[in-house]
Length: 265
Image (cartoon, rainbow, N blue to C red; front, side, top):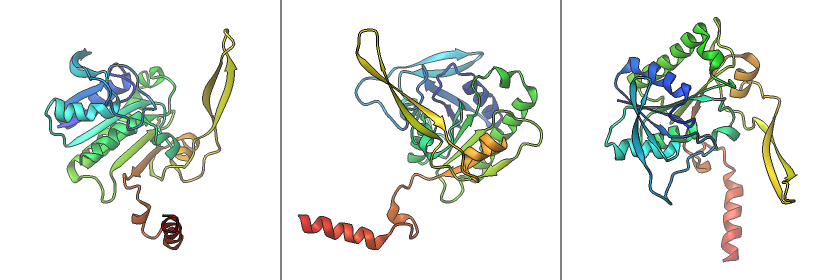
């Protein structure tokens, strides 16, 4: 059985598309937040009760919840008592490229929570501002469906590739014949973060956070999606332990750090 979720809310056209594409593989459960929950990362709800109720989405049943995308993984597996072979998250409105975005993404947060439970997970995002153009473009829909089905079917049949916990797939703004899927790493940054100070009518200060596009680094997910107009396929791992990094960490420097700490005790 497959679980489909997202962070744009249960009424998102991207969620309905993902359900439609995934249904070719077998039974599908849909559990998603009742309203958009973007940029909540792996956040889970511990400070208040969660609600979950059935909704009808253009002819198929789904469960809406007051929780976060990460909450949906636990509500589906433990609340509904289901056992899943695969979790698909998305299709997100807007790309989720770069580590800067991935680490705060609710779409990826749901996928990572599934991976923590040992469930293979694939996250899908599209570099579009609205679904209107995509839904009215038969070629784009066909290509998107082919990419979703191919990745999901492969993981269902063969399992997640060794050393990979989550696969992130990002679609370009325009999907057209000749588009290619490319295996690339996540860029470190997508935006130069800005903070603007403003003053409200009562004279109190408030702050507005926003990002300015950076020039993308070649051979990264940002470059492939934004500059080349191709599909970025990015394998991700939950292992954030630098000591497991195959020599990437400077062990001598870390030992000096440890000695420095111990001398202070």
